[in-house]
Amino acid sequence: MTASSPSSARQLWAIALPAMLTNVATALFGLADMWAIGRLGDAPAQGAVELGAKFMLGLLNVFNFLRTSTVALTAQGSGRGDADGGETLARAMAVALGIGVLLLAAMPLAIPLGLDGLGAEGPVREAARGYVAIRYWSAPIWLANCVLVGWLIGRRKVRHVLVVEIAANAVHIALDLLLVLVVGWGVAGVAVATVSSEAFKFALLAAVVLRAGAAGDALAALGRRGTWARRELAKLFALNRDLFVRTLLLTGSILLFARVGARAGPVTLAANGVLFQVFMLATLLLDGFESGAQVLCGEALGARAKARFIAAVRAALVWGGVTGLGVGLLYAVAGAQIAAAFSTDPAVIAATAEYAPWLALLPVLGVSSFVFDGVFVGAGWTRAMLGTMAAAMTAYLALLYLLQPLGNHGLWAAFAVLFGGRAVGQALVLPRLVRRGFSAS
Image (cartoon, rainbow, N blue to C red; front, side):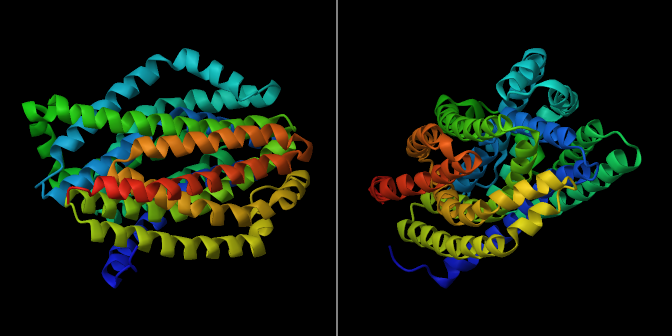
């Protein structure tokens, strides 16, 4: 691959930096919840929020393909010179609303089955059930927000998304402080704060899309036969199918991580929850390079510009790697201190200090897989991405079994291999995909 040009690096950062800040603001949702409930000094309550959040992550994150596929298809349309993204927005929103209706219908069965799957028992289960019973109602709103955010990113309106995310997060934190620490609603207060801020976020995103004129385009597209053409729907569902299964595997690995940690007791569960939230902060920061790769690679593929595509891949890998190393060094120095700020329970603080060294390794291993995810999604090579995810998941499951004697350290080691294995697999198949994808250009 040729060296990345200054223009490709500038374009990458123009998308990645606002996306990073947006993702960090998103991460503050979970961190604010964990911090607020941690002020109560109640390990079972903190564990309940951790399990409840994992339940909602497992329920909703498998549908994150709505965002990623909307980014990819919108960016590819921009590369082809499409005047607007109305048809893409209309199709994606129709899918989101359909899934939302199905999720609400499944609610009476989904909650008990999900808590059973996470191994929730006793007081932790009861508190987690109350949390989920409230937060579940925000599922359709979350799905719609995925589509709106995906469309805005695909049109390079990342700064608009950043402003919305900061505003919604400010509301969320304020509600956490009010409902948990002032009103005294505890776990239920955390759930109400999350639902309210998600609804506020939707209102802001909808206002931005309306102002851009895309809402009118989407409404007009609903009545056009071309919007529902078999070829376009087949492309959408093939992309979403692969992303759904891949995300299902990734989410399953995270839920399995929570379940194995729960077997070690409420202290280890709470500690893993704190460390996971700190890791997610790094993940969402580095994920900005995934967003940049999605948009730039999608546009390059749509324009059939191979040199531009290669320059975008190289820029994302280089700058993503530098940033991942920087985050890893930060966590190596201050990871334990950062994690300790999210609990007042001495046992939980001691446990986070013991396992904090894993925080330094994970960003370094994970950043390449995040970048490759953006490349593969932007180019529409989702079947290959699914295959590499399945291979990495197989290694993860094997290590969960083999490393049991190492206890919670073994759990974190297997989790680290999941990310490193994905990156290796993606790097091996990428050259063949580039040759095939641009063979006619």
